[in-house]
Length: 107
Length: 418
Image (cartoon, rainbow over all chains, first blue to last red; front, side):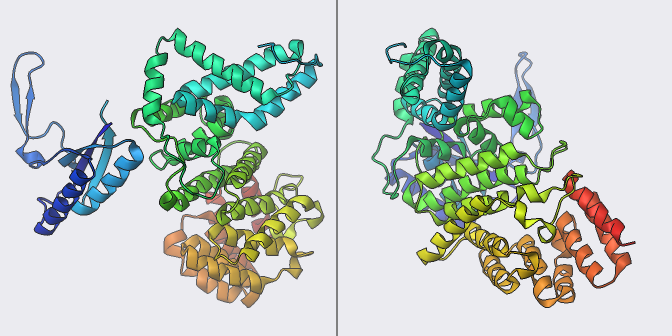
């Protein structure tokens, strides 16, 4: 079963060197434990571009689709047998990157 | 389903047998079906169907010699029928074998009972507190959705939705159906006890807008479920502590509301109206924990405080120095302002209202919106002869009190100031 661990930022900005080092250690642990699928960090909302091509108009807008105080800044996709394991890993990840995380199952 | 020999009985005897079986077997049946089919929703529906079948058939066919076995078999068939109808039996059973953790039980020193898994799943920390309460009452307690909705004064459709959403999250996010690992057990048991304590307190001092100051069905259900957990985790001190605390509180229920519907405080209660057997059982549990020599947690200390209160023949015989000493221990375990407030109330009895008032006034920033803070101030000020300030404090307490009996009691106290 796969879970998405979203990393939520509230304007802290990029990870510090210390945070990056802790994230690396956490990632190694994920790989060693067979939980690793994929992970990535994202640019902030102001680097986003919204595209609405539902009607074929290809409307391009500068910025995120909705302005919020908290936003997605990175994620892990992990393999875990159940939510308890996923929550444990998300807690470790939150500590490593010093940000809130949210866990959601892939369907 | 007539393979069991049974004796025909009267309609009322059959109904009573169903009620009794519902009380003793519901959680076990839901738990067993959840394990077998890996889905709480199917388990719940099949169990409900089996009991409905019993209601329809036992009066005519007789009560089977082993009602639990009959209900388990019937519920299993209902679940399979349901899955066949929905043509997804294979699919669900395959899913279930993935979801259900079949590894050997952790060495928790307890009997591995299906019902424990059910309780821990319903009280999972990934569910909102109100959802845990509703789910526990439905799946473990066997209360119907309308009953739970009534108890918490929410619309039936809203309660139905809450429970449906919870079942969907358990399934989709795969909240596991198991007893937590040994290293997580203490925290998770704490979470379960918090749910039961909330159910009890909502029954004991209801905050809802309903007419009843005490909801006996909620206090009774909380006690029943805590007894169940005690039977499943007999070595857990906090489980014993919470059960003792509930019993010693419930024992005073009859004396707690006056004929006119006012709250009667502990000091004014007719102690002859207390339930002696509940008190004896609560005291036994407290003594058992004391004898264990293990440092007590929050519920055990609260139970001990209640044991001291219920040991006094009259209110004036209360051993306040022991109660203050117990509150000192409680402050170390739980340094919350509410505990400090309750400690101050005991201090007032030991060292006088002036000392207590000074302590309580320091809690104002944290507790200004809490009615009990203003009640304590009103009582201390009253005893110090500061009537105007006391009246003001009663006014604030009455405005904040959510329980009708308590508001009535406070109004009476205020109006006695003259």
